[in-house]
Length: 327
Ligand code: HPA
Ligand code: ZN
Image (cartoon, rainbow, N blue to C red; front, side, top):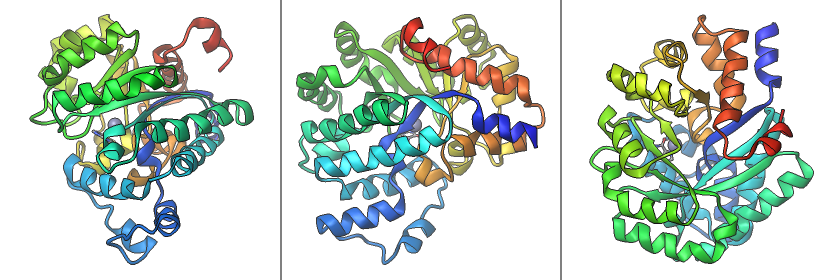
């Protein structure tokens, strides 16, 4: 088979990966043992069996529980290093990695511990794996604007260790407008700006992310198809969408992969990309997303593979010289 081989080998950038979502059940159990954390599951198999989700919130409840085993700098390092090795094996040359500091600071883990552990793994990956990776700090949108400001303040001593800010967690009921002021502060600090919008939420949330947060990319964004004028705007602005096909199916945004709107997004001229979101929870890393998406959607062939890879480099946050080194 020539197409699967192309999909595996083609150099690509991953722009939508939550590092806490790369925590495999085996690593959750080994970190729980190492740190003396009790888990409400008897075995790796029992935990994995709980990964049957009906919507975003049903996933988030288990995802935050899994992250409770992360306490020390080495834990964050080991998690990120495991992801980066898998990314390298999948032809990922560039990774822009989300992390959720509030998931850890709420449990008493200092933000400096989180960033130091992740950052050490990224430094090692540049040297040893040829993966150029950077961090994007995400605010949890189910928490308050004030908590987001406190998180940004706490992160400022580590300003050189992350390139941008994002917005994740429970989308419905927590519109981008809630975070307009903290994103203005982030932009003033020279940080890149992205936000999850239009995963479960309406097209209006995508419009808010663009107009109020002034995002440079939209994470997910697939529900833009409900608003043709918005699709036209996204295409005209070459506004990237970091689409996560396996995530969308596991969280029931689409009933099956065959019903995914990625082909329509590409046909409309959007800068859509393929990403893994939370690979340990949704059934696979980068290449599994590419392979399953192309297998279910016969409209997608080699031409679309090259387009998606080019889109991922176009949408990445780096200057042209740095991008040239990834191809
Ligand atoms: N959506 C919102 N929040 C998240 C996700 C997601 O897909 N993954 C991890 N946090
Ligand atoms: Zn996400």
